[in-house]
Length: 205
View 1 (cartoon, rainbow, N blue to C red):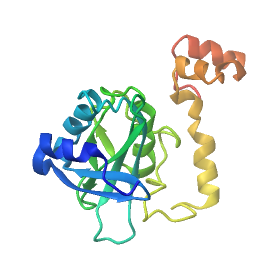
View 2: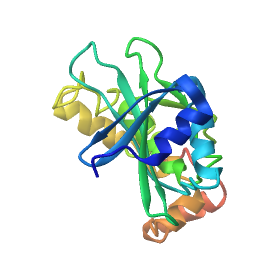
View 3: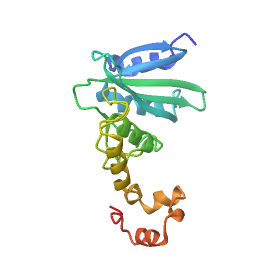
View 4: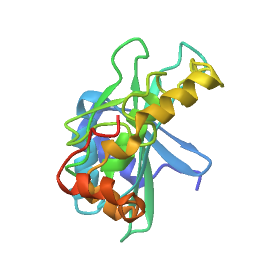
């Protein structure tokens, strides 16, 4: 598809210059909107009759090597009923705090997606109910692995990385419910399972 999605005209009619620009790339329509109204735009796209983008396919971010180019946060949406897709982006200043509003209240599936973007890129999702690392451990101190200024081998030596990973005891940072869902709880030693049942979480440090 080389033409803009009809949703672009509807968005411009509803939000005016809050829609900064729109383009087609590899057949996909991409809409850039102002960060301060991004949540309103996304809520409208989900709830407005004729739009009904009810499925949040993904949330990610893009950092370009060119320092003059903005940092982007990306929401990939799909209307299951209409079999239509739309990509919404906001451009953020790399020199300012990287923060957008959480869409957890619109799509509960945003929970882990936002945590991953926070973990890998350092984007803060304001209003997220439990914003913490999801791939790296809570005490991970090397920064954000998918940022362009992150060294391929990390900031620390391999020996120091190994020492920190072994000392982190990631099991102690997960709730009993999370461990049960992952079926990891039943693989833990009995004394650890007993302590977790009693609500103890820091005993492995």
